[in-house]
Length: 389
View 1 (cartoon, rainbow, N blue to C red):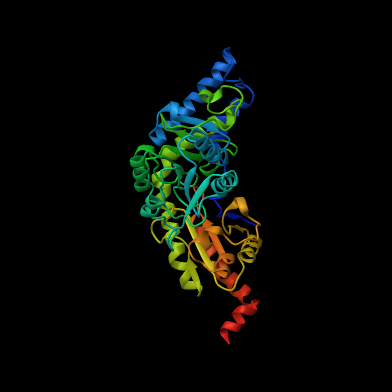
View 2: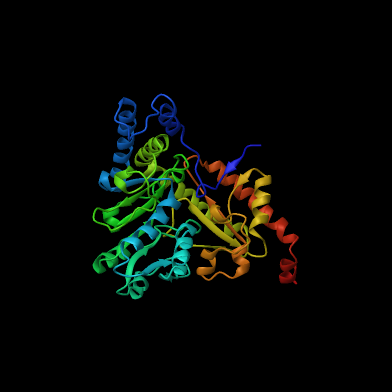
């Protein structure tokens, strides 16, 4: 069976060129970059070359890039590090109701520790209003964190406008750009951000490596403490193979992103157009145009998302119901609830995300089999039978 992968928002395959770039650093060039001998300095040079590539991609300075283990660590580092650094100023954080759990869970933990957190709700398309952010600011606000684009519904947020508001008020502003880096342009100055998280495995790099952009002058304390690595901002011996892989992956994205984005948005729009033609009572989640080029998310009435996934998987097609980090959770999507979808539609969602290796023929195959799956499942649904009577 030829298998089709339509779950690129969960993770991407590591590009073969990335694997080749990483290979020497597992054995021949294995040094610790903190060592002053040849092996250590060889590793350090590779690390700094990768740092330079990341900085160039983001429009940042090399010294503003801190390597981490991925998006979750970067997000946690921001929430804990900025509130610790800003403890004398205040104890209030502003974020949104549709953030990734890597932001929401630390925020909930901080609430239990006495911090105040305001969760801004988006509109029905998943877009957060800058005016709502501005209205939530108090003299105790130390951090605003708004994701660049949502991992479930692909909605792209007005980060530039929110960043301008934060800067005018002298408040640190963070964006989780895990879903956007490598897929759409991300420039830290144009976005007016002070802190930005990214993760290599979302753009054809290895798992277990990411980074945090920290604008010079931004107050943040280390989340991990120990050695003096990363200019005393993140303790732990650096993952050199991973860092080299991240650098190569971002280099490839810089070359290919515009072409890939155009190709993926064409296939995305085909799905958005054709699915409602073939299936009744299906609803697009997220903004029709202000969305990631590779993201499609629909809710289908009278069917459980898990049932759709299992039937697609039996035919060799991999998709998702939402965030891969909560896959298997019986709770309805907090993102879909936040945009006003009823529980039934939250449970009946399907996320299709495209990538570098997606072919037009694979989308045609999906469009061929998915309506048949929906018809089969609805035929077994007592709710659908009741609606027809």
